[in-house]
Image (cartoon, rainbow, N blue to C red; front, side):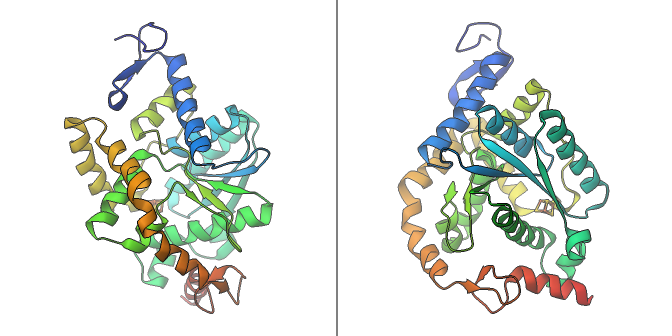
Length: 301
Ligand code: SF4
């Protein structure tokens, strides 16, 4: 197996591109894919400040590394979820990467700063843990970006993640979610822009990227992930991809390029009905936003 670019011995193959790369050319390939996504979808403008949501895993640390190498002013944001040893370890990896790269890491801790962990929050809100976690992350990532004067929040969702979410949304025809499942969510009153620069790279590529770059990431999955529907969707798509390389990319980019706009009016109408939360001022459809309601219920427990 030879590197597609330089013909030296290859160390990693990317079947959907029918290509293999040596270590140096693979790093270049990953940077190129991120740069291409940022440019094509106008994710980050010149001179803008980026807040990267980092979990200590391969995707978010790999993304942060690539953005720094591409010359972006990118700080990290770590959100402590209070999930026992998993949270301790993930914070250690995020802080270790920041120290090694001389980058700035903002830390928000749910138990210390808001008085609940994911388990308590889920019980209080009568939601599944991942639902309470997603709600907390969406609110606090945006809040940290607004407070810190950042222009954009970047998350480490990769092609596998996005294809699995799309698969789930299509299976149930969740048209509201389909209208929001875009690589860029534009800024609006109270919200900074959200971008997903890893959409052209798969999970396996991100793991290989971190190994090649010597990035020490947390390998263990979050213990709350067990039974998560998206893991089943990923397995199903992996079986399809195995037989037909490129299927995930065709599925996801076909949606973005040919269909996503059809679902936009619903998402835009939803945005139009927002007004400030009475507690925190964040945009919401009710008097109090879902995050403040969750915090209040968790405190009553
Ligand atoms: Fe949060 Fe669920 Fe992911 Fe764990 S698996 S980090 S609880 S969304």
